[in-house]
Image (cartoon, rainbow, N blue to C red; front, side):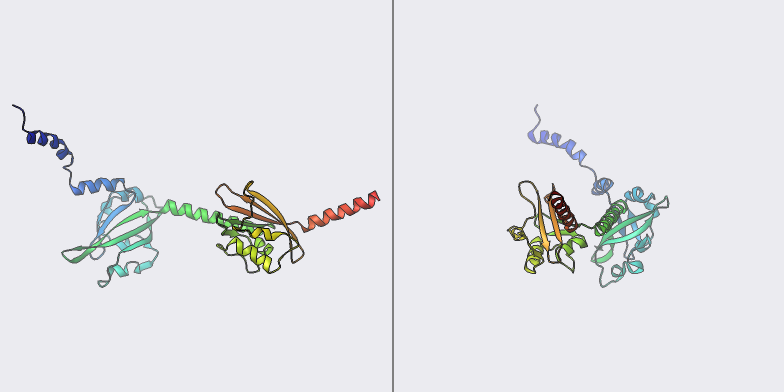
Amino acid sequence: MPSAPEDRASQRASPRSTAASGTAAQRLHDVLRLSSEWLYETDAELTVTFMSDRVHDDLGVVPAAMIGRRLPELGVFDAGPDAFAAQLDPSRRKPFADRMADMRHADGSLRRIRFAGVPMYEDGGFAGYRGIARDETLRLSAVDAAQRAESRLLMGLAAIRDGFAVFDSLGMLICANPQLADDFGRRDGVPPGIELAKLLNHALKSGWFVDTDASSLTAAPPRLTDPASGQSMVEIGLADGRRVLFCASRTDCGDTVLISTDITALQSAQRGGARRSTLKSA
């Protein structure tokens, strides 16, 4: 005798029901195993009551070693002993983020750990904090290395005799060395974010650019590079008597690199050589 439709539906649903029989806690545990953060919970006094297994990957200690310790004492927090003063104040109990601390790995090395947390409430009363922590050591080391490299680069650019600047695709200054500011007649420097058009207009209206067709540079939108080749050069006379060659090149990402070179001495040498050649031929 064929099974009733409801019996067949029950049979089809049975394997699925078995597969989904895991508890919510088990599913959360599985997700935490894949997460790069570790989850923690505290009681109302900020004593750690739970720590996920991920802490072992980052600090080399078992979660049980963290249980019973107070959150402010897990490491040396940048904000000092009062790092969690707001969380301990019954009238505040604010969520927090980006609490950075130095914590010691089991191998003795230091790790930079970022903590965040939100208050928990049970039966209408404050029960503690639940939050996440992440090991930021490698990321911060990379950021620090990049900043040091940028600092060394800027120091090197400041020492060269040529002016140097980078503008983004919208004509906004990203960085420039002091010589570039001097070649634009800016004694107060050129701050990042200033528009290329403002630099050009200031140099023209103040009379800093002389004996040149530099006014063509202020065409809208202002560009220093030829759209066809991505490069251009223009020789400009300055009010202090110098002759400067401005060379601009467009990068693959659409930025413009501008280099200014003082060619006054070179031109003087060329004119002197031309005069000597003329005298000899005469």
